[in-house]
Image 1: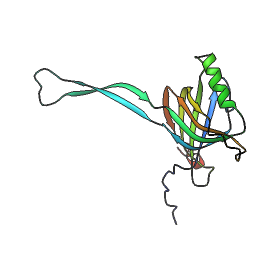
Image 2: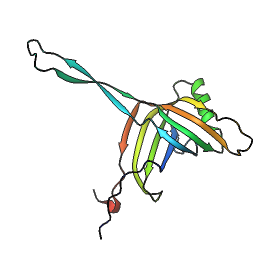
Image 3: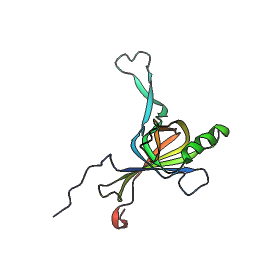
Length: 158
């Protein structure tokens, strides 16, 4: 029996942030939501004199959304420190990757690579004495480029 191809699921993902020059992730945090993997291309319309039946569409500027992570749990303040460091040094950048996993939670299905990231927003949750973890309500990252990297097929086939 042939395995049925399963669709990508959006509930099993990881976020990895790598500051410039570092091979270890900046922070180990889990987030409930990840939004902002978005590329938009603008187009310019050019009309040719005397050609009233059509116009030419020419590609223009590419823009990217902010990556927004919500309801995160972590055991440290590394994201807060990165935000503070980026205020002190506005040229400080990092690369980030959002990894989508298969239903088993370990097989990589896709990897979104974000280049030259800088923190744009950090928000603490409402403080509650019942909770015992350090949480992040919302963390946003601006990035300059987004690429999709697909994992190598199983068995090394190309």
